[in-house]
Each structure stands twice: as structure tokens, then as C-alpha cells.
Length: 510
Image (cartoon, rainbow, N blue to C red):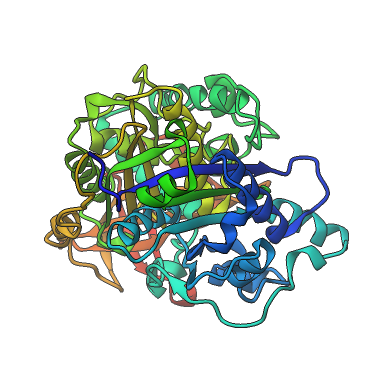
């Protein structure tokens, strides 16, 4: 029998604003929320009973993004959303940054409901950098992007910076720079040549484009071949070696999604049909050793494995029992790492995405996984008894959240058990000693070459000095050095490291 305090996911709504006039975040979230209520078979009267609202942080409110964009903002997004929906929640939060956030919120909402602290939870988010950037460029009307009630929202989540000042000074604050570091380390660890690995990346991601092509909410609903994805061309320029544009998450989109989570007894009282209900059978959250330089290595992601094992155990299933996956896919290495840690083949016939993935479905800031959950709900309603697994990933393969869903009800009391167990697995790990000012002989542990639109920008190296201590450095900026790192394997290459200009360290490869 299902416990009356069991959390149940009853409604999901999505919105995509391709080829439309800018709506702004308020209207986009409202549309997604209206669709979620209709999807659950409920009426707008529900909003008078919603007791908890969580709005996923907009990318424009990330510290570095906000500093660069002179655009209006919502002062208190949860208050604005509640006002628009006619809700008076007793709890309203606005999250910190991280792509893991929607699944982490789902886990939190489920716990609130199971503990009797909430009955109706609305999780919602939007990303609107697509229309915002176009409006800024054209000098158009920006009023849709701001306004709303004044005030400071209650923030939710981990507010630690994504990297240290030392890492930031060398370019590690940008995911387009850090994920290639993991990719190149993984390639070298697997013993692949540069060319063989590039072909493997195309083969991995081409099926994602096929899913996106069939998804009405995708930003880029176009199937592409493996060769198209990896071939550098004017419309597919290299961004951060080895990733051309088509292998990068695209954040300049207009997409919104909303999910409603109710207590089982509330769903019963409101008459939510059984065929609308989806249950969170297992969940977990964990973060890796926090800063990029702290990691044990760059060819594994232990927090994904720890969270995945705990979520599957809570659900009482194995990875072989999962029928549908949505593995976070901001860059190919996030997919490869998830497959590696969860024990899923990269060519698994079950498929690795239900949306189409962030480079093709679209990468709506921190809110992508809300779309994953919404789509997973639809898939599982159509396959009674099947299980689906969703992963969320934040920062630099840092923050991980996992959910295991099914339309079959949870039996007995819903409980996460020891929710801190996955984190304890990570906290005992230790990376190498870090040196801030290395000098002398050194070798490359991993690296990338960062491109501007029409030229090279810089090389980034994470290396080891003669004592085995880890450091971060940039390379000389001459094209010959950077081209050489893209044409032959750099991992394991020897060179020298020394102090450089503007407080940066410079590694010069042999």
C-alpha cells in the first residue's frame, strides 16, 4: 500500500520560444506552469493551495554573467511567479547556480512532502538568454525581462564559488574551458588517438540529435550525422579543443519547464488520475572534491557513481532494470563519465537521452533537468512499470543529483535512508598536493586549447611538477605551440613551468 505522505509527480509543462517575440521569464514560467496544471488534469484553483514554490536560478543571475550583461532583472523571481499565478505559498525559494538543481529540488520537494512539511510543491524555471541577447543587440524593448515585486528572495542550494582565484586567473571558471580538460584526460586514459576519439564523440552524440529532431520543445530540432558534429567548419568552429560548437551546450535559448509534486493524499483529494502519477523511487545528491584542481584525476567522476548507486539501491533496482535514461549532456564527457560511473554502454540500445541533450534540445541554464523530468514523466506514463533514470550535473562535473522514476507507486513509507552516505564516499578521497608557483621541469596531466571566433585564444594546462604536485598554467600563445597541441597528444608531454605575466603561470611544452 502507498503511504499517504508519499510524494507523487502529477503534472509537467514545457515551453519553447523559437521564432517568437520575447516573452520574458515571467510569462514563460507562467505558460509552463499553466501547462503543468492542465497536464495533471487540475484547474487554476490549485494555485490557492500551493504551499511551496521553488524557482531555478536564471543564468543572468550568475555572478559573472550578471556583471557582463547590462539588462533588467526580476528582483524576486519566486514572488513575481507567485503573483502571476495567484499563489500565496508559505515557502518560496530561488536557487543558486548549477545544472543539478532541478533534480536536487525534486529530491528536496519529495523529502518535504514525506516529512509532512508540504502538500503541493511547484518547481519551475526558465532561460531566456536567446531573446535577451537579441534584444540587447538590436536596442529593443527590455521591459519584459524585469519588473515584479521588490525584495530579496530566499536562496536555496550551495553558494560556494565554482573555482578558486588561482583557477579563475587561468581560465577555469568557464565550462567551455574545463570540460575539454576532462575529455582530453579521458581520451588519453583510454589510449585512443586524437582521430579515433573524435570519431567516437561524433558517434556518441549523433543519436542525441535524432531525439532532439523529434522533440517539439527542442531548440535545434535537426538530426545531424556523426561526421557533421565533429567536422570543423565556419558554422561549427572549434570552441575548446576537442569540442567544435556542435558538441557544446547552447545556453542562448528561450525555454521553460514546470513540475508539480503533491502528497499522495492530496493527489487523491484533488482527484488526480492514477495514469497521471509518477513516483520518485530513488534519489541522491553528492558533490565531487569541489575545485577542479582538487580532483583525484580527470578521467573519472566519483560523485556520479556514488549518487547513482545510492539512488538505485533506494529504488531497489539495478542499472539493468532502467528502461529510459536522460544523462546530463552539457558536453560529451559528461555523458561518457555518467556511462562509465553507472555501468551503461555508450551505445546502449535503450538510448541515453529522452530530450535530445543540451547541445541539441537546448541548454536552458540551470533548468535543463526540469525538462528531463517533464519528458521522463511522459515516457513513463506511456510505459507502466518501467523505470527511468535522470542525472543532473552542476559546475565542472562537481555537483551531481540522480533520480529514479516510475509510474508504479512506491510501496510503504517513502524514505531516502542515509541521504548523506554518497557524500561520505567522496569526502574521504584526496587529490595530489597543489602548488601555486611551480618552477622547473613538469609534465602535462591534461590540457585544452581555447579558441576565439577566428583565432586561438590560449592554451590551458593542468600539470605535475618534478615533485608530483599539481598546478594550473597557460601555455605560450603563439599559434605554432597551440596548433601542435591539437595535432598530437599533449597528455604526458614534458616541458618547463615558470612564473608568467599578470600573476599567471606559463607551461612551455617541449
